[in-house]
Length: 413
View: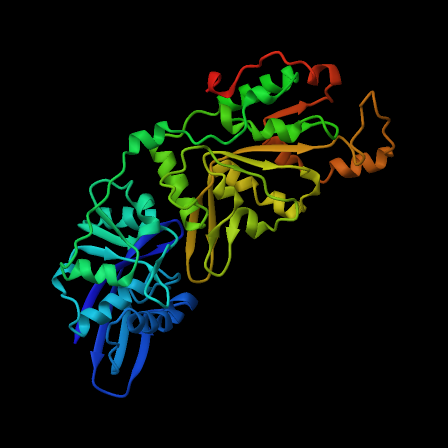
């Protein structure tokens, strides 16, 4: 007997529908999955068989063939566990097929039949709506994320048994919708504020100009001058995210698996500060199944590179094209993917290897040749893309001890 279940898979940060065909015929017991399944999809057959038995269902001891269409696109991830299990139950007559029409089902199965969250739930919900699906059934942990998609019946379940009780009409799962307007207005506090900065009037003014015009900025100063502190407060004075920006940013973080449990949208602009040992693939994305890198995770926000000369030169050079186009294109033999990467670049560096060149309080011990070699680690084309070069001097103790109130971030946005 043959049964069809509609599901979805992620490609880049977007999703596409996958039709899961489950066929059960007489013959020696076997379980075959075709349609270019990758690692997690191949291993899913073990999770599915154990989950069906432990949840109290009958696993068909026959020849089982699972086809994932379209068959010419690689399928990766664990979101196809639940549709495969439901397809087997429908093909063996344990659940009705009429409830499977116009509905997308996805989720990862545990061995006891519990449902675990998957990556890219928002992208899959958006794909289901765009292709005219009536609803989507997914793990309860992804419910708040997918419920931001209007015009779609979004239902969440915690176990395979709960899904089957819904499909057999024993206990219906009500659809859930969230108030997107309230989410956008509720800007998540990040614990930092522009009023934390003492003195540094020129630096704060430069950050305001950079935020107003979306300019990239380079902070140059001795250790302890507050360069990192200033950069971390830059996202707090940027304009609020629009709905389209929030959805696109959330899609990227969802695919990367960085959304907090129960989080619906990314309402605050992201701030990413990778370590200087990062690789070029970690910065712009990559891998056998390409994932977004730090440049894409900072989309709509700030990418901060501290100790800029310490980054490998080839890593810094890969940023030149994303800074111009706002996109990262990864070309592989089997596919070509594009990730959005419109970010503000904030960088910080010392003026010399010891960090005290030009500082009146600490003498510089660097030779002119070493200073020149240190500054030459940053190429001219990259420096040209940093619109503002700002000298950040050290702050005197008297200025730090001053408790005069400073202007907060919400007064500047």
